[in-house]
Image 1 (cartoon, rainbow, N blue to C red):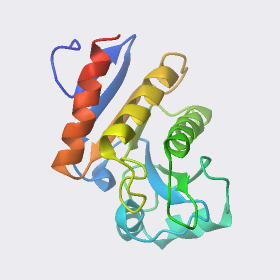
Image 2 (cartoon, rainbow, N blue to C red):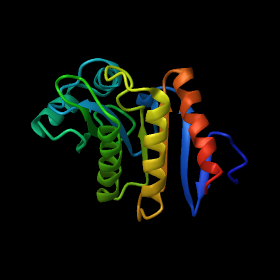
Image 3 (cartoon, rainbow, N blue to C red):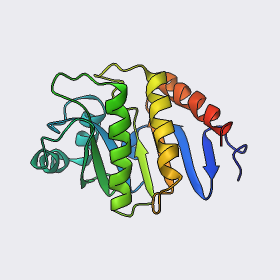
Image 4 (tube, one colour):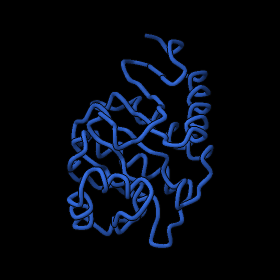
Length: 184
């Protein structure tokens, strides 16, 4: 299977980045990422869906590890989810605002947590685009570029996915992923 086999997949050096339209709670990756606030309480959006499907234990564990700096990430169990871990990426503070720098840092620090745990696979949602209202196209560019750069030197992480619930969000990430294929 080569880069040209599937539009939603970028492969290089035995590593993969892919985009899928779907529900991150259905992910079979070893870890999924939660778009978190720095106090790690889980309200609505992605966090609410993860808590609803995975159980209250995820939020309870997260809150014990917080608060953290915006841009940092902490790990909890996956509760009842198929994913063994949830990596809580603090992409915003209590004001629920984010920035490109916060998104880049939260993405990188989530990947570092996965590498530290020696995980092979991790799936992300779009960080900061819901409550944080960050533009989806810019989010896709930042997250995909950061993931590509990280994978080039990662020892354990081999597969980074982006699970987008909304079709327009999926198409935005897919467009960026196709652009990355041209620079590999």
